[in-house]
Amino acid sequence: MMQTKKKRNSNSALRGFFRNAKAVVGFSIFSLFVIIGIFAPLLAPYDPQSTNFAPSLGPSVAHFFGTTNTGQDIFSQFIWGTQTSLIVGVGSSLISTLIGFIIGVYAGYKGGTVDGILNTIMNVFLVMPGLALLILIESYLKSSTPLINGVIIAVTGWAWGARVFRSVAMSITNRDFIVAARLSGAKTWRIMFVEILPNMTSQIASNLIYACLGAILAESSLAYLGFESISSNSWGTILFWAQNGGAMLSGSWWWFVPPGIAIALVGTSLALMNFGIDQITNPRLRIHKKRKISKKNPALEPSGGM
Amino acid sequence: MRYFLNKLGFLLLTIWAALTLNFALPRLMPGNPALNMLAKFQGKMPPQALKAFELQFGFSNQPWPIQYINYLGSMLTGHFGFSYTYYPVHVSTIIAQSLPWTLGLLGISYLVSVVLGTVLGIFIAWRRGGVTDSITPIVSMTFQAIPQFWLAVVFVYFLAFSNNIFPMSHSYGNTEVPGLNWPFIRSVVYHGFLPFLVVFLTSVSGWIIGMRNNMMMTLGEDYVVFAEAKGVSPRRLIFNYAARNAILPQVTSMAIALTTIIGGQILIEQVFSYQGIGFQLTNAVTSEDYPLIQGMFLIVAVFGVVINFLVDILYGRLDPRIRRRGATS
Image 1 (cartoon, each protein chain N blue to C red):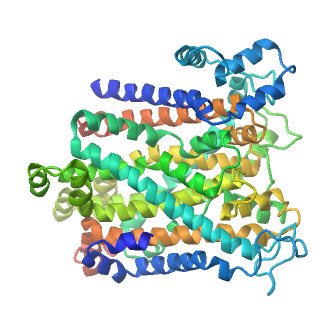
Image 2 (image 1 turned 60 degrees about the vertical axis):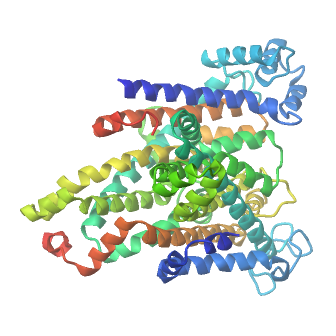
Image 3 (image 1 turned 90 degrees about the horizontal axis):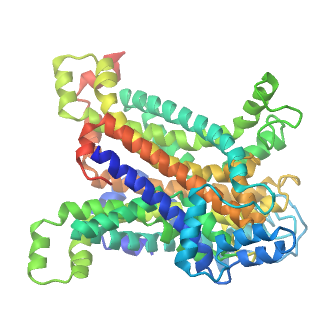
């Protein structure tokens, strides 16, 4: 889903993105996980819930990541968990970016009282402690599913993006092409999505990436705390069962290590992609990069000082 | 003064929002699970306590607005109700007992990572282009992407369970008597080290990168270039000219980071069974102790909001320009 979003960006930015080594590495790692997620039914060797195997087996050829204390194949759980975690991450980031875009751009575009009210709401959401709020909501929701959690994460976490979108919208609202569109009688939603949106694709992409990382982390935290129904299967639920199934006492480190590494890898790949976007869109970072290469500035070089 | 009042207004507004959330959530949820709680404790508690519970969670025949006003009144006077797992202990007592642990652990690990990270960031900006400069962003990204609670689990397993280098749980040993005595303090430091390390490792890199990028931007400013042309020594240029201004955005990040760090802390405390707010919160969820959940959420929210307020005021002092701008930006 994210790729199609990005393809809509102007071509030059896309080329710049793929010329950046960090962005390419990040994109490759992320794509690998997407492929695992899409082809989970083919890749998973066993039924993730089946308890047909010997309990607490270490990693082997038959069971790459060993088995749980009830004899489930952890590798199959991991593969299916990849699918769930990515759907939650990408889906939640799309929802929160959409909410953030609508509220942020509307506030920035309208200005005045509308902006004052929306901006205050945004700030309230920004200072609310995210995970504590999620835990509060979940405590009333008895065993929800990963998908519901993804929606809740998006609904409580949109303000980070909205703040960025608002400031960009404010800076372009008075440009000629927006004024022209308004004078020609275009509706507000049209101006927001047709005129303003193409001018903040990099901010949107960057926000999608951060929201995706945040959602994957938040979902795994909630699942780890046991807020998801026992039939759901995500990286977080593997960690939950590892904790509750005595992975430590039986020495089954293979049970809780893979999901954490996977989350860290996906997170790093997203951060790398964001780094690539930053290099394209932030002129100041680009200027410093040029200077770093040309080394025109002897006084600022370390050799000059030491 | 206007700036101060604006910020104070926002502080009160946010606390009100947190209170309203606590009030509205149990009433909005389908099949209010707090109702089951009530059934469970019927007969085990004096009617007076049950009545308070009913008022707090909306099982009363009074109209909503009246319930709401009563609710706000009891919350503002510090009546968070009773904890049901620890009955007859008040929620406020539990908060008072666990808050120092959270604040101590959070405060120390947070301060150490902010100070060390900022200093390292300045250093890396000074020697930019070097090996550290190219490696740090990657290491930093990886550490930031690692879920804190998972790192905590890994540390507990490899450093505490398998090798017994550190204790697995709790904030001090069973045999120590809490107080200002050396064995107790030593035990607290010993028990707190692993949780501290988790927070430190996962957050320090963010400060390094943030400070480095701020330094890069400041070093490009005209006044720095001018000072450089004037012949100011590089050391002075970095520390007295650039770092002073580059630290300003760090202050804003400090406030934002606190609200997220508190969230991470909840899980870390859970993993280490460290008796702070987060541990009590997750325990309360398991035992369906709704008054305790509400109280813990409220205290976490108020803490974050107050810190945010203080940082805003501090920022207004550090950077007079900000005071003239809009109130909530």
